[in-house]
Amino acid sequence: MARQSTHQTKPNPEKSPHRDPTASGQRDAAVNRIASHNYFLLEKFECGVVLTGTEVKSIRNGLANLKDAYGLVNGGELWLLNAHIGPYEHGNMNNHAPLRTRKLLMHAEEIRKLIGKTQQKGLTLIPVRMYFKNGKVKVELALAKGKQLWDKRETERRRTADKEAREAIRSRKK
Image (cartoon, rainbow, N blue to C red; front, side):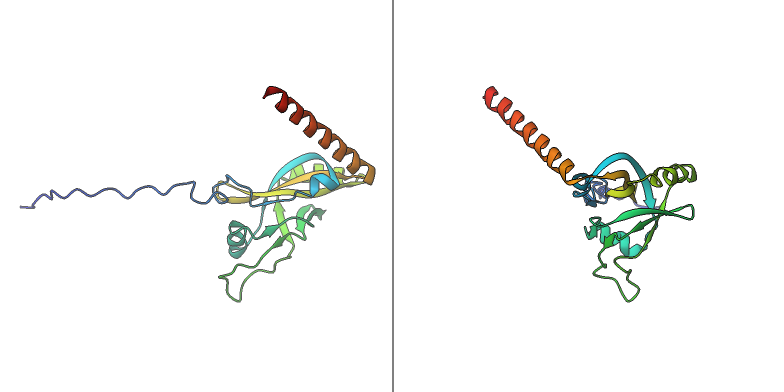
């Protein structure tokens, strides 16, 4: 006859999904802040990225940089060029190249639309941010038009005026 145990064991506590804010999708892995300064961002698209394992681990560690990156449609496929993902520190000799060209994943219909739009003069594809969604790395591409110097000055003037107005309202409330 089996003896019943009076010892109570606690079930293992669930791991917090908020343990790593980047991997859980709460925080962006990389943001291209200069993009909104240098370009008018007209339309945004979400696409997946073909990555190796060490690249995903580097992105989780915050080693991704989109500053000089851009998108290119070539042969009916979408590519991400000049996106820097630093080497994984615990990688071996099979570690990835930091500036390699990476394939972006989008529906064929969306790529056909992008082909028509990027052939217009002055329009290009700029990655705005890189983030995790359901455990997968996603890139937000923006269809962008370059700003002239006077456009940048006008944007800065408008931003300064808005900031002063908000401060004036805040000081009136006090």
